[in-house]
Amino acid sequence: MTEERTQVLIVGGSLVGLSAALFLRRHGVDVTLVERHTGTSIHPRTPGYNARSMELFRAAGVEESVRAAGPWRLTGTGLLWAESLTSENFRWLSPPGTRGTEDGFSDVSPCDDAVLSQDVLEPVLREHTEALGADLRFGTELESFEQEPDGVRTTLLDRATGTRTAVGADYLIAADGAGSAIRTRLGLAMSGAGVLEHVVGIMVRADLGDALSGKSFAICQVNNPDFSGMVRVVGDKMALHVSYHPDRGESAGQFGPDRCVELARAAAGVPDLAVEPLDVMPWQVRAAVADRFAVGRVFLAGDAAHVMPPSGAYGANTGIQDAANLAWKLAYVLRGWAGPALLDTYDAERRPVARLTVDQALAAGRDWFGAELPPEVGRIEPLPEVTVKFGYRYGPGEPVEDPLHPSGTPGSRAAHVWLERDGERVSTVDLWAGGPVLIAGPDGADWTEAATRVAERNGLPLTAYRLAEDDTAGGSSFLVDREKRCMSAFGITGTGAVLIRPDGFITWRSPESAGHHASEVLGEACRDLLATG
Image 1 (cartoon, rainbow, N blue to C red):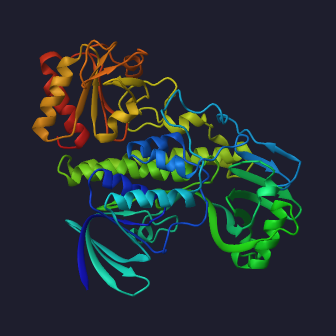
Image 2: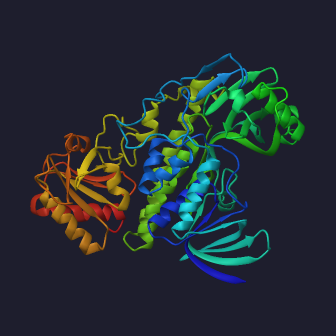
Image 3: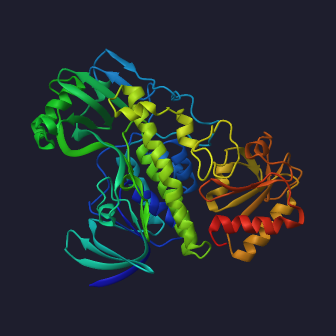
């Protein structure tokens, strides 16, 4: 049997697995990804990607490609409620706490949400990840794995040829979905409300150009005597999500081709609509979080780690953000910049965020659609959409903050502020894309000098900048803050500084100067960041 070696093996080539591979390759990590299916998903699934996820795609250099793949403009808020797609009796749903289509997130991010389906996004991620040199193997599954002190030993099976390959990896990422076989093998339980609903996703091909009459929506809730469920239309494909009830003897097997055609026509409101059935995929609406996100050298991400109702479209976005959190940590450990203990922070940081987000998805289902949920959900206080997307925090203290009024405290996301570097307009979000970054006040030369010494001493890609109020300072190490917002957003004075991680979260802050102790103080902050102390 052939034997190979990789630094990180990713199991699962859907959205989260591809995102993890992309982020890891951007950090220079050798990646092998295996996916049992022969290609990316044909189901639309997630209707869009929130502005925080788009920040991460921006940092990975793919934001423009993602937006170009799905230049979708919505007629209303994106959530349509109708008797059928052709009915004149419809209304746009404005869920509580959400921003309208024209509001955007420009006050908290250089990015806005992107409305495109998962079947459109995944090929974009695949193309860019392969271009960066990742080894992506579709039609291949993980047959077995065993953890060893210095890595993970695996056996991969090519489903078409039956060929088996032994692959050794330093680390393994389980992005193998809600029914994760890896999670089961590790003996990890999931806690939460559990299964809330049984659903089939029906994919058909149908020409709805005339039927839609110019309406453009992300999701439509259709209710009529012959159809009740969610509908999405992407190009010439229509995805229908219909509930069924196993306790009444119903099963996914009852949704044969003829039934799918009937349902599609009922949802469209066009009795003679030409419909080509494509696929039926059973799934469950669930709310649960794995009791651990890591065991040894194996890490769970995405649906393997947490599942939540689709209300709010938080599930896929939470998975993308898992991948970003884990990728830079794996990269820094593998490159020798960080200690192995840094990887312990993945579970410590992401699991509380997952629990919070699952609760918010449950609350959204209750408040948006009147969903019948377990009694304990009634005690969940719904948060504003902007807080769910940008306000979660890592570490001790409150789990969230208002991103419209950033605190700059360690554990919070670094605020977005527009600055100028060498005459070019950049966001603070653009600064951490290449690694950790220190931003000091106009009089914080001691901090920038200390950062240079610390970076050279540790071989760390730490970049340092000083703020300036105008162009007189000059040089690429200065950031012109014309709006004079940066220091207040980070809670520092003119002599202070803030250290931002490669995922855009603040890890350390000194409101004022440390004088001749700056190198010592910043060195300790970097040791804490990288778990090398």
